[in-house]
Length: 62
Image (cartoon, rainbow, N blue to C red; front, top):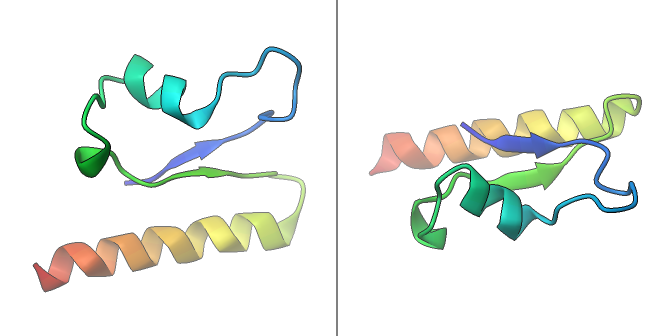
């Protein structure tokens, strides 16, 4: 699992750390990757998929 943030550039948008805490991830080592995604840009979405696959593969190696 990864967490994709949209609208991170909006005024008063929460930062990734606050979002992780709000989701209950108090230990940074146990938090899934959090990335900013612009769903209107294919390169941004592709990067999110790459991060997801890489994170998934790390779980297979453990």
